[in-house]
Length: 65
Image (cartoon, rainbow, N blue to C red; front, side, top):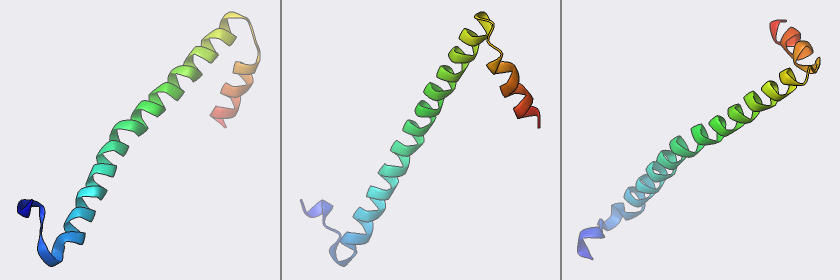
């Protein structure tokens, strides 16, 4: 276990490993959540278009403003 002991720099080194690990996980999770949200919005829009709802037309008008 001496290989994992960095002396007086222990806190800084392990904190930077921890921060790096959190950022790497963040870079994987956030795009997956955004993809899920985008697919849900696309499915909803397709469903509304198939059923002749006017809600998508008003949404697209608001997006163009």
